[in-house]
Length: 241
Image (tube, rainbow, N blue to C red; front, side, top):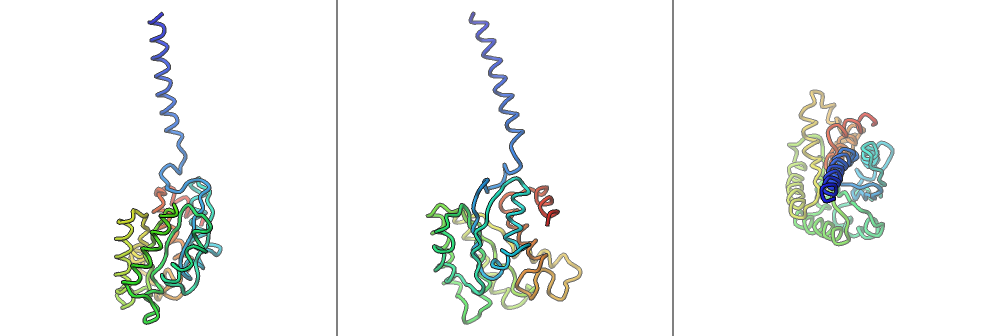
């Protein structure tokens, strides 16, 4: 009797291992993606993000890209033209936290620098951005930080050199707070450097700052890559754009 029971037990164990292996093989495409089915993603930002919520803007492309990888999500657009870090902090509760998102992407820095004397100093920017991240994390909202895209498609200009110090802080903060990071500024610089035809400074933007269709695709690709889409999933997503 014991021998029979032991035999049955071994068969059950083998069946369990086989079943476990099959389950592992059947894990859907989104297994490596940090965003879960049904998640709400808030997109906090300025005019670049406001425009990104339009058809074929980067916000819409991110949602479509996730869906193409098997993850249906919804967007909470929270971009307002001209806004800087102090204004985003002031409206964080109203435009993001009160809407109970699971994730928030943060795109902030262009206007803080571009507005010159009407902008936000690096020291104040650090305080504002840190508070935004802390308040989100305290509310259980996961954060992805986007480095700020370029101010003119010329890395050597004064604005971009200044913006580099703001982006350096964002990268440090992402490490410190364990946020996802999409280094869109680096992606943008790389795309411009790799292109033989710079299109008169409008390779990725319509005016040096605001994204054209290719710029929106560049931004969406960076966000999706940071969310965990594989190269194959990114290729599939971009084929649908």
